[in-house]
Amino acid sequence: MIELSGVKKSFGSNHVLRGVDLNVRRGESMVIIGGSGTGKSITIKCVLGLITPDAGKITVDGQDILNQPRDAFLARFGMLFQGGALFDSLPVWQNVAFRLLRGSLARPKDEAREIAIEKLRRVGLKPDVADRLPAELSGGMQKRVGLARAIAADPEIIFFDEPTTGLDPIMSGVINDLIREIVVEMGATAMTITHDMTSVRAIADKVAMLHDGVIQWTGPIGELDQTDDPYVRQFVGGLAEGPIEAVR
Image (cartoon, rainbow, N blue to C red; front, side, top):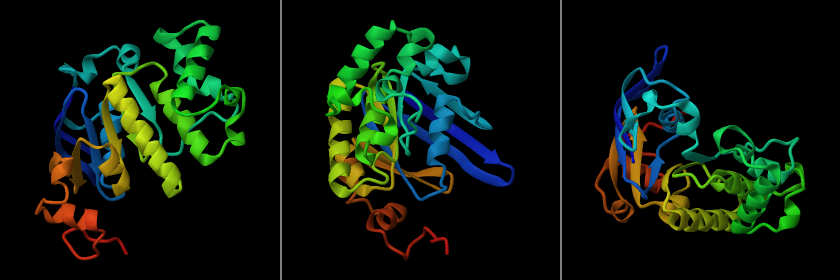
């Protein structure tokens, strides 16, 4: 469903991606792990076409992303942002239905509201939340609203950017379970970037380790703890000693 071949991206002298090769099959949940600043978010932005790679090729469903009509292309994606990224001046239901009120997916306002309330129910939120403002919600509720927005238009592909950041362990577990259930239920292709190894084990079918601008290792989640790759072992184990240098 998603293929990156030799993708490179630099910002001045900072060579972030040095030749990323990655394949994500249709309906698969791929989790990308790696330290801060290794290019995980840049990789997702390249797939979305928000950043143009300096070299390499990216295809979605076999089609080069640079040759796609933008609105129709982006309509295939849903996104759960790291900080929630809710619009604080809009009520919850309009946040969830944001895509459904605009562009090629636009629906009548009443229909968009009904869909939004249904998606809120799917993530465990009651209809009375729909007319609240984001500031009236807890962090966990805001994350659920972000998840409801990500699935509002029934996308084929969903990106999750650090989905459990800032949440307590219990709420993190709730969000992980919801993500896994929804991805399987929708048959969606998922790409997640996270530092949270609990999330990795809960939602991944396959894992890719991004370090120094390339994919150092990729494999099924069941092989994560058995691999001899020193980068993976150090990262998963949270070890100070190893090939990954800690920034001091």
